Length: 141
Image (cartoon, rainbow, N blue to C red; front, side):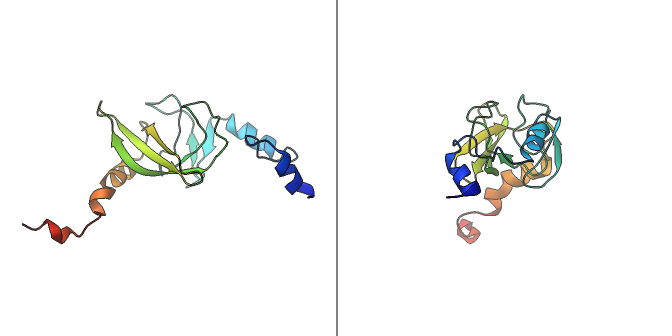
């Protein structure tokens, strides 16, 4: 093995970026800023959010990135995109987003934030009613 293939094989599971990559420092500086770029819709998003201590999804498209093992720890080595697949209403009547990682398929529940796109939240919540698993004609009396 030569070059980057050999280097990638010797890197730990949690450190998958090439240490010789000249852009690695730029990514690190970007993560320390007050903004991040959504990997799905590419919008620039402020890190601070009302209603949650750790912003974990884009308020526009509701996609997330698999970065946490526990809320706020940023210890997951996966870094896959997390698709919003459902809305869950907690017993306290608080809405939460259900995300599934497109890479490792883990499912996580995250609080919604005060600046989340209300149309996107309602569209996600209505999806099961709009796409029932049976023909609607069966509902006739």
